[in-house]
Each structure stands twice: as C-alpha cells, then as structure tokens.
Image (tube, rainbow, N blue to C red; front, side, top):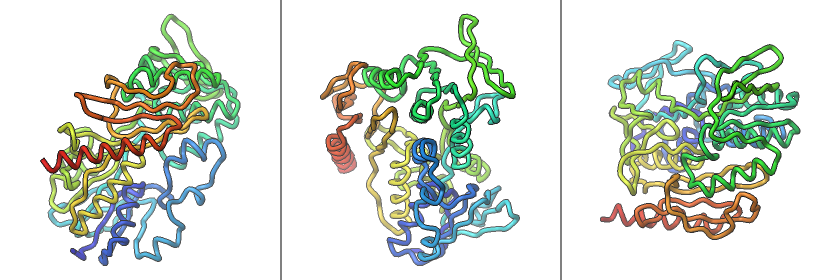
Length: 394
C-alpha cells in the first residue's frame, strides 16, 4: 500500500467518501480534500428536500461533524479552487496562490446546473446546485405566490413539489412528452405526471418555452401561440453538465465527462475521477455512462479508495431516489425510456398505489423503478450485481 499523499478535488459525496474510505481502509499517508464550496462536505440530496421545505441549516446537513475530519487526519480546504496543475510533476495550483503536491489525485468535481444562454441567476431566476443556491431559493419560495419551473426531471419535480407544499401556485414547463421521459418508460412518466397534477401543479408537457423576460418584480415566459406566463419566480432545472474544466486544463481525455477505466484511472498516470464528473465503463452493455446521483457517487468514492489501497473493486450498480408530491420514487440500474416493462401494481396516472417495474432490454434485466416497494428494488439491485459478476467471470 502506497503512503504517498492523496489529494481529492471536490468536497461532494464522491470525494468525501473516498477520503473516509481511505482512512477506514488503513491508509496512513496524507489525505487532503479541496473544494470551492464554502462548507464542509454535506448531503446534497437535502438541498431540494429538507432545505427547501424546512430550512435545514448546513450544520444538520453535514456528512460528518466538523471535528471528525481532524480526528481522522483528513485536511479539508474549503472555499478554494484548483486553477491548474502539472500531472508530470504531480502538483496542483490553487486559487490562494499555493502549490499542492500529490502522490495520487482524485477528481470528484461533480457537475454544474446547466444554465440557459443569456439567463444567469438573478433575484427572480434561480438554479439549484449548492447549499447557497438552496437557501436563496428557499427564501424566495417563502415569498413567491407563483412559481414557474423549467424542467420536469428529478430536480425540477422536487422543486415543484416543495413550492406547491409551501403554498405557491406552480407551473412546470417540460418540452418532453412526460416527466423523466429520457430515463423511464412512458407508463412510469404517466404516474409521475399524475402526482404533479393531483397536487395542483399546472404541468405543461411537450411545450418548449420561448423568450424569457426578467423584470424587477416578475418574470414572464413566452409559450407557443403568443401566450405568456407570468410569475413571481422562475426556477431553471434543465439538467446538469459534468464539471470537466480542471480535467481539460490537465489535458485529460474528456467526452461529456472525464473518461476512466474500470479502476477509475484517467488518461494521466496517478490521476483518477469519480462521481458526476466521471464517464465510467458500463459493466453490462459496453460503452460508457455517467451516473448522476448521490448513491452512485458514494459507491464510486468507496471504489476508488479500494483501488488506491491496492484492491480491485467490483463494478457498482447505480441507484437512487426522489421525494416528490408525497411519494418516494426509487430506481436502480440503467432504466431507459424504450425498455420493456414487467409491472406489479397499477400504472394509470390516477393511481396512488405502490408499484414495482422491472425494465428489460435485450431479454435481460437492465434496471428497475419502484414507488413504495423498497424490498423489491433491493432485490433487483442484487440481481443486477449478479449479472455483472457473471459478465466479469466470462
């Protein structure tokens, strides 16, 4: 086991978990976490849930108590950006003009909320990526009588859910025909659309917004047919992009994410990447994918620590959840819109009953989606893990 220092760029769950797993695994070298966020590592899923609804303070959202990092000998440098580096010399240049050497480097830079061109964050326009964004959005939701949400993906749906629960009149605009249309089959999208409409949300599907005008006291969104929606607040939730800026400055291979192999190694020796910024090999279908959720980032953080400790981690099965409109949506594996479904439970839009759906592709299980059926979802994750193990053994 090498005792050369490990530097981890990114204080999200992938980077923080890697640091924790190194210490749990007995690593005795220096471990340094560097991140531009002003806070110690915290649980980002709380941003669109507990923070928006209950105003949870950052202290309660922390992954570990502030003293824990000192106790285990991990240096956490918050509010610092890595501006450049030299992978041959194994050094990083920081925004405070210091130079940080490393033996191994883990990039866990995450992703950034995708901004619409010409529409930066403003008092009447909000994006959601970090704790400061969530607090600012929470404050505005408390004052807004009406809210427009652009995007009916996971974040957009959770923001819409919080806004409706706080008493706002909510309109969601989604160009796709259904919520989460890119990642779940249509019948599941219909269930999710039903949840929104039952909560009083005006869900506009298949609608592409036009010109957006931001005024001091309102925002308006042009719709097809010459109609314009006006609201107190606009929340933009149109997806995220991997933060590959540092990787590009280090001349790593990048293609909609930092390209890595099965052991999370990038194209530069001694440099690894995990979490939302990484494009990892698909263990069943070939090719690569990005797993943009909390649980997958956590699993990858553990896995890269195992690599640095000299082990060979098994491929992970991505999974996650979303709290929206009083329901908990869970998913595992790689579900897609055109999968063949095997459903146990009612799938009509008006139903509020639990369901479990196995998503099959090419005759094999590719993923699963459930609402109120956690036991079955865990079993599906286990089945996918077995498929991966069999594929690796072949």
